[in-house]
Length: 170
Image (cartoon, rainbow, N blue to C red; front, side, top):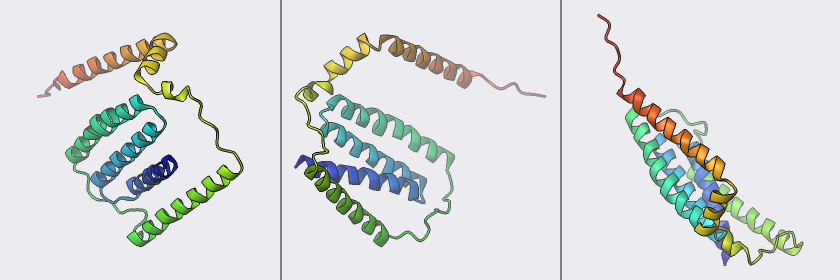
């Protein structure tokens, strides 16, 4: 059952990524990108990485995509011609079914030849908040602090740039 859910989520992620690239509307492209991020969060859940799945939804699909949509609507970008102007739903559905069939064949071959790795019992602990926090604040404390300082400097710099008034030339 998990395998079929993975195949469904992977196919959804690939299809939404292709739709992001091929969509004529920039707003639709951004919404397809949100769908891609939700599918990736589902894959993270299948890998028992609960924290990454929640962060994927909250930070990427939530906050960052709201900013992308805001900028897209603020700029009022006109519709451009798509690279795939003759691309129809019939072709998209055919590619979608082809990817599903190819994924099932590859999985069957990999299962038969024992290429797929066995998942250890320790994997249940790896994706939890406790495991990520322990690793982040022990092994990667210095890069974490440097990143925090860089982000703080970037926010302060953005505030200075936003509050600076242009000099009016008479």
